Image (cartoon, rainbow, N blue to C red; front, side, top):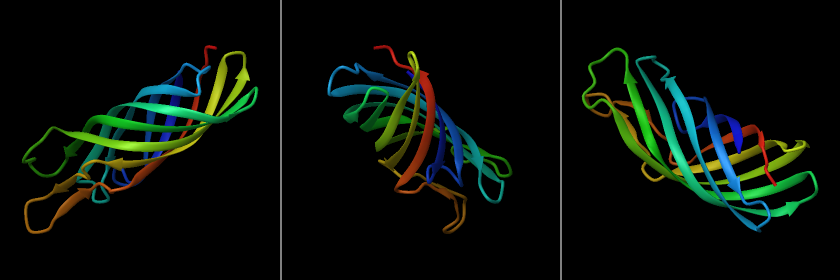
Length: 163
């Protein structure tokens, strides 16, 4: 299990800092299962009138094509499902609440065994939302936020690996 700090681009307005909990295993097989949850708190738009956040969980599979005694490389593919949420600060919301959000991702990460079962992770993940949400303001062609069709984030984590 690993606790991760995340830095994302394209998922929310501007750069977004978030957190995740990840579990993978078992390590002795060439392929492992992967599961986790991620959370990005609200990030305001440039005007400050709106903010958007994301909460999602994932299931996936990982391959470890290279490993030494203390360092390993993982390539993981995942399906994500959760909710993207909007906060309106200055206008009256028309359809407030969470919207179902889903996507697929591919990541590349390195794991370093530090001391005993303690491990550190560094990696990057590319993300494709299945539906890139567009949040509109009433009036012709007024977009409050348009999610990118391809997004990504880097991660760094600290965790425990049980042999």
